[in-house]
Figure (spheres, rainbow, N blue to C red):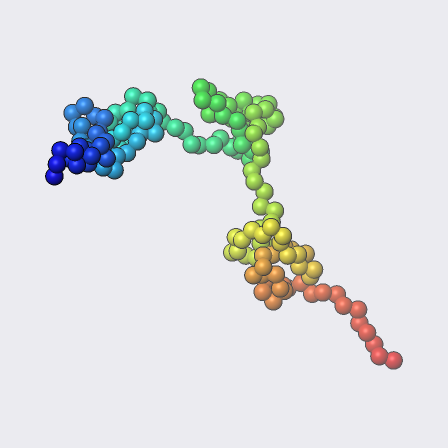
Length: 151
């Protein structure tokens, strides 16, 4: 290999940002916090002791009384915010209610959602395409038919 070819191959990879490592890696990783490049061994924030990493809290506080999602800020304690929400009569700091499962199939064990659910005229419940017929959802409601007598 010539020097030009060798130099071209070296430009493909990136060196690990860790001072004592500096390994040339052809599939380097980029840290989401500090945005530096790292090798496989130092790819996690803990392994390269990232100064910009922080613990992200993914818990969503929900009021135990009303079931609504309570608005959460970074600097305040979650318990204090939920307690403030409860003391306000479940009115303050509310983001939204839990998602309603309006268009879900009511057949036991089915979890399908439909854009336009089918409504059974006999039992007055809604079903997905698979359970739309009375025999498919084992409809036990009896339709009231007028008795026709022949004269």
